[in-house]
Amino acid sequence: MNLAKTFIIVYLALHAIACAPANYDDNATAVTAATPPGMQVLTLVPRPPQIIDLMKTREDQAQAEPRIVIVTPANGSTINGSTVKVKLELSGNLKGYLPHKDPAGGNGNYINVILDNQPDEAYYDLNQPFEMRNVAEGNHTLRVFPSRPWHESYKNEGAFQIAEFTVKGNSASLKPTTTKQGPIMASSGSGHEGKDFDRSNAGDVDPSKPLLTYSRPRGEYRNGEANAVMIDFWLSNAGLKGDGGQYRVRYTVDDGEPGFIDTWSAVWLSGWINGAHELKLELVDKDGKLVENGAYNSTKHSFSVGR
Image (cartoon, rainbow, N blue to C red; front, side, top):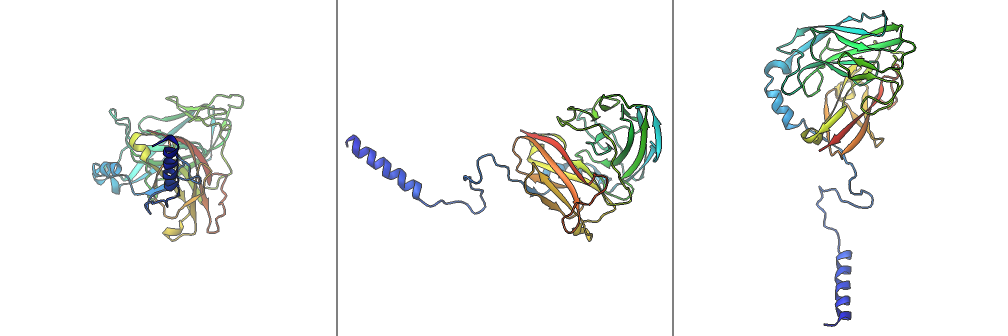
């Protein structure tokens, strides 16, 4: 066979393959010009098996109903100086629930501590005061609620508390707000999860009105954690549509198409591509309009996924 005939046969074979109809599985996602390789397609999935296994080791704690009281700072108080000590009292039907850090694994039950609308910090030992250092002068809000080792919050009555306070005597400092141990809670520049944001001050929040408190995702998700990332939040003074109320929680990932959560519970999303991401959580009414409350009902935080 000469070279010209070989070329013709190869050309005809390639042409036949190119013109043949695609044979896709109905359940597969086709990779086309509209869905290029690496495009992120997120799917709601059940609670991951590793969390179910962890729940089985906690015996009665699944039915615990921890209640929290903010002792300091007292609601409406004024703090002279830039250090704010947080003291909490824990009570209720605990069933063995106790904040603590496992020395081996570095995790455990804890209390979420949120200054204004910044990312939370974990409070593991209630016998030691939680200190916020270099808090900016002005009005602030403190929000606290208990969580499990995998960061899913308890949602019983009395578990969430909020206090408003005022700081005086730190007007000139540009240092970030930190805990006693050093993690940054608020900053005038880059420093917390690689995110830039202004000095932290409270919005005009009304604790008696519907209030959404962002909890997760945040931080880094590696290896098995990256397969399914949890969305969790605390909801005050509002019922969601699926629970018989009139509100919805709208979530938006990386400025994509929004999704909705209609029952107050943690949900998990799978299908993440590696890299940095942002998630926005918003409390909206039945018409999709944002419910205003001191700008706290629309919160965006960053996190990263890697394997």
